[in-house]
Image (tube, rainbow, N blue to C red; front, top):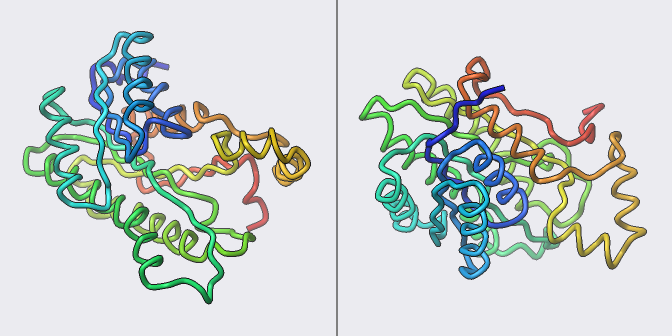
Length: 257
């Protein structure tokens, strides 16, 4: 299926590793130009960007920035428009999770969680709308969510769960506000996806890793590129009827909820 991403500009927050890297590579295969946002480790981010440019012949720029900081968000978009002259797709992938006993959560920790997750998605999406709506530009926003927004059985994740639930609400509410202006907003809800943390668990705690797999009806861990395939589809003309949709990509973890 031709998704029509060739020469589009795609911004992926937290795009240099994990799920974000899988999303970036799928769009690179489709011929899109990439703006890869990262928070730290510029050497790794730039190496990944150069890899995509060399392998797929696309344009890629890496932009450091804290998505919870308004000035950084504006700078990310300035760099994107300077580099490629257009905006088409925003993928809100960046986010962090911490484990803290509920009674030990300080206001500082709570606010940091909020800033790194929900506020970051809001600021990136608001700036996208500000640059698209006044110019009657059509665009796509895809939010990377979490099964934690619906079902969480892990202790110490109150801040993360609350933020992810808020991101689901943000996805729906933005769709209500932005669809009439030609901006499509949807979300993807991954389950267990192979990244640095799961790789460490697989190598160092194989029994724990195997128990995690057994929780998944599909009986395997997802790959970052599988999430990328769904994101690329949702951000295409081929999926225009999906409005405010949250796609379950958990391998069946949410069955019964």
